[in-house]
Length: 168
Image (cartoon, rainbow, N blue to C red):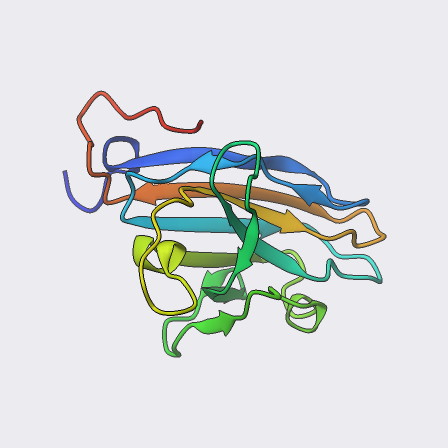
């Protein structure tokens, strides 16, 4: 086989099944402690007049969201149905991705990339592995906009050919 086989080399989570995000939506907390890298693919439908504002990534200590806090992240907006690789990634602060960016990605997608060090980094530069849970939060757009989110965990420390179950 050539390339990267996601079914065997990654753990794929349907973080937010495609649905209307009118009223705001939040994906379920999922465990990513054994992953070296997390990719979140946000696939948007057609936007109405208002855009979701903001879209944030949050980490927590457990599946109940204990100690939840928003974090900054790298992201790549698509253009004409593809990720442009000619420029460096954009960086969102903990405040997230704003409506200004989203107005440019009607019926497109955004890829968020997180390394385990970024998830576990603290404000003073030390590492805190007590926050192994992550989720995406989308604030109400006031419109019937559709969104689906896939989470792809790679660099699994306990990977094996039978797959790995670690969503909770």
